[in-house]
Image 1 (cartoon, one colour):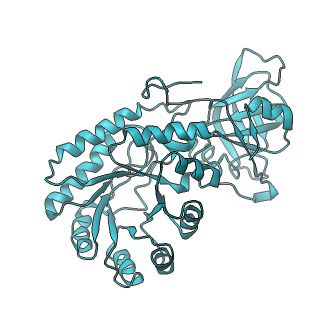
Image 2 (cartoon, rainbow, N blue to C red; image 1 turned 30 degrees about the vertical axis):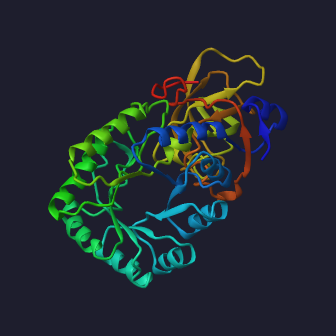
Length: 392
């Protein structure tokens, strides 16, 4: 992978006509080390967030050895890079063939479930294996999340009680898990999730081997500035201590966005300006999916290439290159007022889901990926304090 000192250097040398994706390995290392040093338990990287081999290699080199996977393809990707890495199949709904392949072909022993039917599938597909680690996923409130994940997965606490008792009979080790939703903006959500876990433990009198607080840890966007991640970790530790368990379970988390978001950015080119509308060469069918329906506002930066830039800033909407009117990003994206055709814009925080959501719709697709060594546009990892936000 070709490397550049900065986005400016990349633009100056390549003058790209298609979107360019940038990877910052240093940013991944900083965020990964932060979680490994400060989270009170084991860190499983959520592969779905960004499965690019260079990202995964960097995470493994940084010390991550455990991965939250949702498909056989993700398992294969991890095992190809690191055969000894532990993959936990945390998707609660899997077909029997995938369960069988995961267990017998790839040595995966950790599975998640939220129904009795899924438990039966796991038991039968592994030929009643005696070495399974089984997690019951509990449905919890996603009220503080920007993207609600509570409707599709998780058993209500009332149902999880019986399911956990049943699962205990078939597992070598058991776990209870929850997910507070993507880009969770308040640490109290984790307390509420742990409270539900506590109710299940009290009712069943079974202390799980693992408590998995899931993902949802936030990154920073122009209109979404979360509390320090230290506050999230302290909230989790405090609530776990309040359970007053005789035997302490191993604690697990599944971060994705918070670890890799800052590491990625996309460089787009302006094809046309219509007043406060900018038509760019990437969009919701490319790396900018989350800027569409979820309306996540990415930090934006005009790459000046030496020309004079207006001090007056203006809010713009973006339209992608396809013929579909849904290829629209409301923003607002704040940029210099004199931006024009052929200008380049860097959009940050795209290390999370930017590469994952790309399609070939309308024939628009770019796989131009390079490494850059400059700082991300925005960061919530201050090397000096590890807990204060830094806007680069």
